[in-house]
Structure formats: structure tokens, C-alpha cells
Image (cartoon, rainbow, N blue to C red; front, side, top):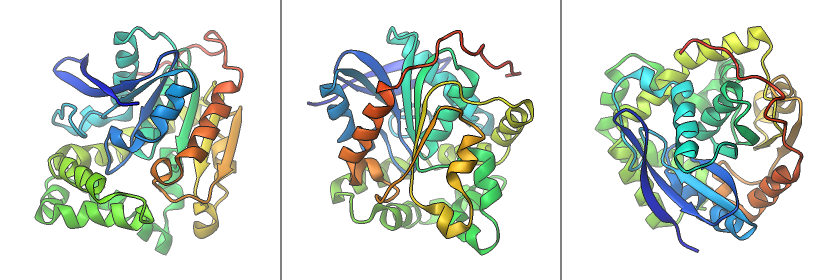
Length: 299
């Protein structure tokens, strides 16, 4: 089964490149860094074969989607609004949502801001924003050096990365890939990232500034994800000294947390395992659209 493609406007002057396959109840899949929608190339057909419309956009700032300027354009609240607008444009009022890495942060924000629209939510290999910053301390923080680099004020990170973009992005593809990335896919990711340095940095810079403010407000207000949540993670907790499931339970009442053996790019390395967990998630009873009113926030 192959993707069909279209461009969908989700905000003024912002359109997303969207790949789709299948028919049936909708699920939106959001990619991570430094990738594009192609990371779902093995997962999407399997979900489509199971009776789902599978929607795989390039996030704003990535791949062939538009790349507006400015850190505020990459607040996860803004990127989550893109996802809601995308689903609406395709005719879906409610939908399941799964994200990997950066896409998972967008998915979490969508679940918090729009609980009446998200039926099920999956997060692949990331902690919520506040928890990530809290656990990456001391020498353990070295594994997340890119988070700190790209949090620095412009234009230093942009200039440094532009000096050797393939070395920078290739480091993560190789270190996190466990040899699971074919050479041609690795090259697609390198090319896409090389042409998106300012927007990728803006995405990360937003996570160190605007996103922290939004997540802190939700934590203080006791807001949690109202829908069934599945989390797939490597065992970072054992390496860095924290309990990942406990941290996730603070954000999600209906939680299935799984520590997996696959590497970071698990949707490419172990797609059957990812599909199995996603189908198990979709089989759980969704929260009623009236179970929680949309969180009130200031845009």
C-alpha cells in the first residue's frame, strides 16, 4: 500500500505536506527529529490494513511542510492547533493521535488543549517537556546536549549547525538508529534537515521557553490527559535514575506504559511491535468527548 499526498492549509500561510492511506476510523501519526512522515512507512500500511484512515503530516518546519519564521511559530500549542485544523480539513472531528519524539510533544499538547478531539493518544520515546528538563541533569544531561545547544539564542545554534549539517543530523540518525535506517532513507532525512535548520532550531528553542510556560501552567492547575494513553519508551529511567512510568502517571490517569527493547527509531526498527501496541490502544474505550472540557488557555 502506498501513500497518497496532498497539501493542507492549517493556518494563514502555513500548509502541511500530508501522506495518507487506508480508510476507516482516523489516526494521525506525527514524526520526530530529525525525520519526516517517512518514519511511519512501515507502520501506516499495517494500521490501514486494520481498518484505519492513517494521516501522516510533515510537521510545520520539517520535510516539505511550510517553515514560518520565529520561535513562537513552533510552540507546541501552535503545532497542536495545526493537527486539529488538519483533521478538520480532512473531515474528522475526533481522531486518535500518536507521536514520536518531537511529534509526541505536539501530541501531548494537543491532548491537553483539545481533550474533546483526541480519542486515544500514544507517545513514543519521550517524556513530557517539564520532566525531560528535570531528569537531564549533571553528566546524564550529556545525552541531550542538542536540547541545550538549540535552546541558545539565535543565531549561534543555527550558524554552528549550518557549518556541518550532515555531521550534526547524521550523528543522531546513526547513534539512535541501531543500523535500522536504509541508506536512502537516511539521505532523505539528511537532505530534509539540511534545508530546515532555522525551523528545527526554533522548534527546540520553543521547547526551552514557551512550551515550559504552558506545561508549567498545566501542572500547576492539575490538568491531565483525559483519553487512554499508551507510552512506549526505551529504558532511559534506568540509565538516568528516574521512574519513567511514575512521571507519566502524573499526566495520564488511563495509562499503559511499556519499556521496549527497540531503539529510539522504534517505528522503523520494530514496526510490528509498535503496531501491536497502537492497535491495543485503539481497542480501549475512548473518553467521552464531554469527559473533560477543553483546557482554558491564553494563546
